[in-house]
Length: 93
Length: 276
Image 1 (tube, rainbow over the protein chains, first blue to last red):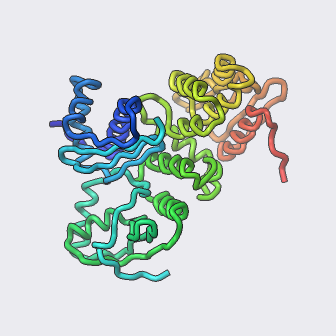
Image 2: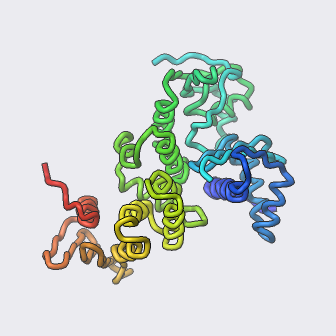
Image 3: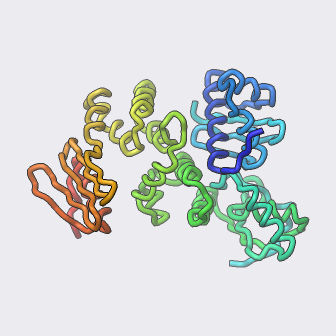
């Protein structure tokens, strides 16, 4: 299991997750999405296979991330940081 | 301003906190300290009248640590202001905190612009008494996104009057050429009159290039061939600017900010501001 100590890296991973989700969901109707652990795993399996990105992002969500992370493009709410379960609201597609 | 004890059950974390990630090791240390000494520094709270609850503008780690330490109430200062004012207060408090990353600071400035707390980066910088140079320095440090385009550059494109398809093109060009937010703004200005290729070519041409560097003396020479052709020599103790057809100017390196401002005005084609 990789280790994650740097909070800047954690922030980068969480933002990248938000961007990936926003890119994936921008074509889907609606602005509010709940992303469960299965979709989360599928996203990384499909877009970033054979990397440790998912493990590291899971750690960032579990140990570093605030409950709500907001950028001008999207708002990511961490409903459950262990599974993880996320809610994404897209502000700008 | 009065400090009053507020029950922990009434305090909630706020979505307008500039801090997006927390350092768990520091949280553990803080919890130990609060177990022994209690909360010695009051939290800054905002009374969110829309939701009828207290939200933490400063002290979310102290709040978390106090909960872990099993406290029932904490000392706090309460602001009853609008959301815009609360954002300004939150930012001005966090601005001086060293462990906030450049990305978090930049993101928060962008969010304030998006929520129309400020109209522009310049206005935000003026309000908080920070220089634009600092902001752009921060932007360079904080450019972490893989697509190579900062959030503020994206916000500038989104807020521009360009049609949607042109906005897409600007974003594409900015990503491909790793344009800074200042260059993106310039690209938007030139996009209409010159077209995308010509505008981009002009911006790329106006970038200073490092043409000489001495690792021993740390002397560097930059050349720029934009609107205003110049050569800038940065040596120990002084900076020398040689402008095409206008002679040269040597100033102490400590005054370099003045030179940068002069060049920026020259590049924008507006001419330097008249001295007061």
